[in-house]
Image: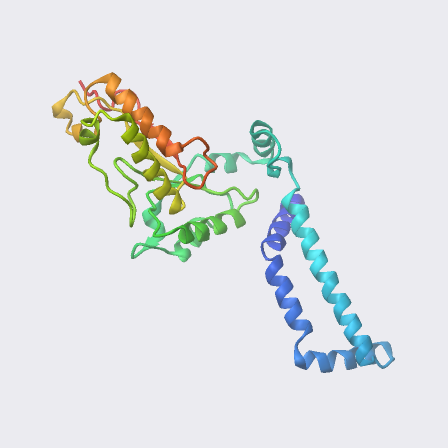
Length: 284
């Protein structure tokens, strides 16, 4: 319990170090305090404090506070192995999991509806604060479709600052035939894309989808659809690339390569999740 509270304090100080620093500098340069504090110190010490001596003390106190806050921030930033980006991913994951409670692990498997966090198509921070108030973290948020990356940045900032381990949420969306968000490109439905038989075109379309989604702050997309359109009564034939296995595999692979590019760390790439699992498109 004590360790948990200390860690929470570290997170708080690290998150607000800049604000504390600015507030302290403002306090030390306040005109009223500049005239009253030296007199107060003189009374306490029974020794008049000259203006030059006060300025020296003022600079010393300010420097001390700034260095202390910076030290706290830096010590927290590299406190645990999982926070070290130079270590192998497997090692970082193992370290993080060893520190998490069962409740925190379960929460990472949870999924929240993005529509519940919006009002008039804009992110509502009060809804975010209410929904994620228990400090256990957030697994993922679906179908938020933010207007811009700032909404996601504000959301992630709150999530990271309000769980013990600073874990962000996975933001994911639909992109059946284009990122489904404001200002994005709507390509023809998949059955039309499949009729092109053009893998190079599919890769370029995938690149546009990945770039537009990532520009909105989204990491992960549900697509492409690899169901085979062989049962008209299913009712979702238009979502498929066609009825042929080789065609769907070839065009689907090209879409994934375009969406993910050659490096998922690029700000123009997203994670693609081919769908649907098992027999979704083969109801017979």
